[in-house]
Structure formats: C-alpha cells, structure tokens
Length: 280
Image (tube, rainbow, N blue to C red; front, side, top):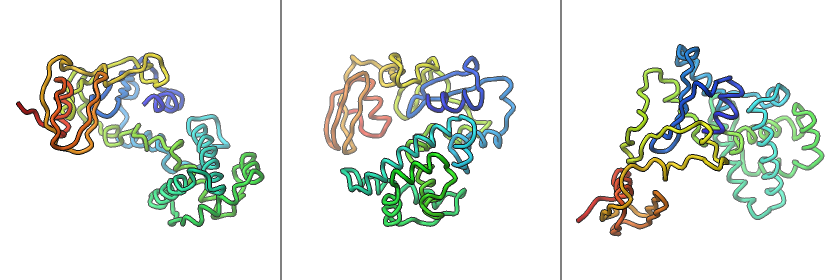
C-alpha cells in the first residue's frame, strides 16, 4: 500500500495527503481512501483507467524508458536489473538457476494469456537461449538504447515480456489494487472501528506515514487491531492441518485434532477463520 501511494497516487496522479484516510481493513490489507472533493465525480471507467495504469496494462516498455521520470520507469529499470541477473544465473547454472527458470517460464505463460499481448507459449529452451545471449556487450547496448533488438526480433520481445512480468515490476501481483472495489462507485466501505467477520480484528485508522514498512513506527495490525482480551483463555480443538497463527506476540501451531489453550483474541481468530472450534 505504501508503494502504491509513494510511487503512483501522489507523484503521478497528484493526490494530496490532506484528503487521504488510511486504515487497516481488518483482514488482509490496507485501505487508502481519497476524499478529494474534486475527484468524487469520477465514474467506474475513469477509476478502471487508474487501476490499469497502476497494473501496467498495455504499457510500452520502450516508450516509458525514454519518457519522463515516473514510477513505471523506475520499476522497469529495476525489472531489467532483476531479469538480467536471473538470466546470468540460468546461463551459469548457479544455485538458483532452476528456480529462476521456473519463475521466468511462469511469467511468460501469464504474458501469453494476457489480452493486451499476442504472445505464444515460450519454451524453457528459448529462455536458456536468451540467457546465453545476455552477455555484457548486448546488455550494455540495450541500456544505452532500449529500442535495439540485441537478442534478435522475437527474443528481444520475449526479454521485455519477462521484464514487464518480473516480481520487482508487477505491482498488482502483491495485491496493492483491488479492481472490483476501486471501480465500484456503489460499494459500501468497511466502517472504521467495526470488526472483520473473517478474523475478529478491528478496522483501524492510522496516519498515512505508518504504512511505510521502513518506518520505525510502521503499523502492526497483529498488535494494534486486537479487540478481545489477551488474558482470558479458551480451549480450541483444531480442525485443519498446518495451522499457524500469531497475535500480540503469541504464536500457536498445530494440526487437526490438536487441543490448544489460547487467548480470547486468538480463539476468536481461529474460530472465524474456520480452523477450530471452542470446546469445554
């Protein structure tokens, strides 16, 4: 959420912090509400365009790199560095070469299915071929002029698809944007102070700067959104395997059939998640 604000909403869209309300959703993410009166009129289509830009839908790598400074330009530069590192490891058969090969293959599979591209499925051998071609001389030329087809016509296009889909580039892969919620102008927004029915944590408002994970005072929902007591105890019978949960620094682990004595807050969490039930 902090990346969404610091790289897109503020610098590229010009949203003002004074109109922003920030909250923990109570479950799996944060909400940034922009309440600028001049923006309240924008419809679903305009909202979808914002989401598409953030996700990089249909973005032109070469145009972005040669254009003015932007969040996407920085992300693509990081993506180039990340992908070239992975290609070198693949070519040299380094410790993580199989992991990187699987990762890039998955990226290209997703790219081939995207409605904004006309790509076909790319084989692992093709990725290895590009990895072999990705020497310092070619990469140096590409950095100086991103329009060059240094790997050949088709292979260079594949390289840029790997860059666009790399985990260092794709903001949407981390779930920063929820399109269904963002574009729905009639959606009822979760009320500050209410409890989330899937885990029992409170929807909690906080200052925008506390979204920054590198801040010394970053928001910790597993400490600060707890409502129920940490003193009162309950016995829980787990009904799922490989359960792991932690609230207020108290961590529990177990498998189906295990009985645990936990705090009221953890008992609420486990029951609402469907991982256990209260027993006498």
